[in-house]
Amino acid sequence: MTLTFAPPTNPPTAFATANTYAGRTIKQFIRTPQLLVVNALTSIMFLLIFRFVFGGAIQTGGIDYVDFLIPALAAVNGLFAGGAVGVAEDTESGLFDRLRSLPVPRWALLFGRSMADTGLIMWGTVVTLVVGVIVGFRPSGGVLGALAALSLCVLFAAAFSWLQIFLGLVSGSAQAAQGMSFAVFPLIFVSSAYVPVESMPGWLQPFAEHQPVTAMVGSVRALVLGGDTEMLLGHTTTWFVTRAIVWSLAILALFVGLSSRRFARL
Amino acid sequence: MNSPTTPTQERTVHERPVHQRPAHDSPAIEAIGLTKHYGDVRALDGLDLVAPAGKVTAVLGPNGAGKTTFIRAVATLLEPDSGSLLVAGVDAVAHPRQVRRMIGLAGQSAAVEPALTGRENLIMIARLFGHDRSGANTAADAVLAEISLTDDADRPVKDYSGGMRRRLDLGASLVGAPHVLLLDEPTTGLDPRTRLELWDSIRSLVAGGTDVLLTTQYLEEADQLADHVVIIDHGRSIAVGTPTGLKAQAGLDMVEVRVTHGADLTSVAAMLAPLGTEPPRLDEPGRRVSVPVEEGTSRLADAVRALSETGIELDDIGLRRPTLDEVFLALTGAPS
Image 1 (cartoon, rainbow over the protein chains, first blue to last red):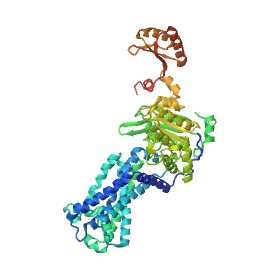
Image 2 (tube, chains in turn brown, red):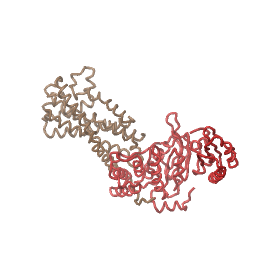
Image 3 (cartoon, each protein chain N blue to C red):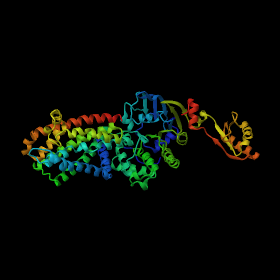
Image 4 (tube, chains in turn red, yellow):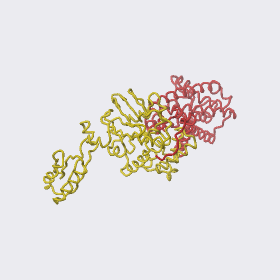
């Protein structure tokens, strides 16, 4: 053996592990332009269809439909972005086996994945906001409200990235992961994201009213549109924001736990 | 098997950094009564296996014999249901992170990232072994040179040939300067030429005495690379020894002659009969005569000499070693 270097003296820290794997994953995203383009196009397509096709038929009280829609799309983008597929690919290819054979804190690998996937989700969110402004979206809640809303979007993105990681780990293959991504659609559509909850049949309303997506989109709307719209949204900004944060933390806790368990037994 | 004063061991100590190695001289891998069940399938069924220190050990067996399950247990990717498993003296179930600091995994259980360049792949794995930035660069450069990929280091791996990917995969297992190298079917699916190239890489890598455990379905691969062979079937070890010893156990070499004219078969058989340990076997449609022999090479020379004096026309004459199928037939009484 002619290798002349010494083995590392210490195993990598959790920080170095997460950063290294996140860095690789972000490079992979950037070098797979079709991934970024498809991601952006999906967001734009949903936005345009709802803005121009369904939007005219949906009554949202005193709020313009475009102002109702765009904050919601920004909040739930993490449920559309297919992080699960990338995770399933790393499982299928054997990369996860190699990484799991290394002296790394295993949870830190998943944390790195979540960092990169959160970045990918936020890319879709930014595209949504830019196109939203082009088609008439006007945030009226001031700079602070917008910044607070954007921070919440990052929190939601992180929570959804862990949900996607779990789906990717249990799916077994990229194709199955693609299919499983549709499993979250009821969560997106049976919420106040596209239509007001009051327009749904009575038996559906309790679920739509209390599920996480409604709290999340409500909090972003309230912050972006400002205090005047609170009356129209049915609850106060605090009511929405508190619920959205609690839901996000609950989703994080659940899927960090489930994913870590699953990752240990791949 | 291997006392600390053998030459191999000395070389190991001088050429490879070995501070991770426990002080006592334990085998690279020692499995006792290892079991792993998947539902009703017993992937490992009381496997006993020792890979001596300083040697290349091949785990040979057909598909489904438990090879990959075993190497995944050693790599701490799965936990055995029962039994004990020591890697360089460290309990792999009780102290998996300590084991992960000593191993490098390559082959079908591992993968490289196609979107990154060869160098980026190695740096990523080196960082995850615990190297700092400059240590990772040094390790990547040294490994690239070793696996002859320096010129292609900055090309994306998706443009690599199959053989280059396998070499990079092998390299990725080395950037942590591991104490025990685990190669899971390193050449499965490669064309013969690429397989030869990869064998060369593996041979030069292990020349310094790194402990290597490799799994393979090919007797020839075990023969080419390993000092010590463990044959497993249905999750158990069924034979242990050197490649030569096992082949002898499996049966003798055969001198095999193919005649040009079928009419010559019987006279050729009569000439070969005194060389064999058993009467010659005739394959009339194939115009072939074969006879099991001891000391195959000299008996082949005898056969060539005797036949050339008669002037009988031959299509082919040669020495045939037992195939893996025949090894299995001999050891298990059933085809692999």
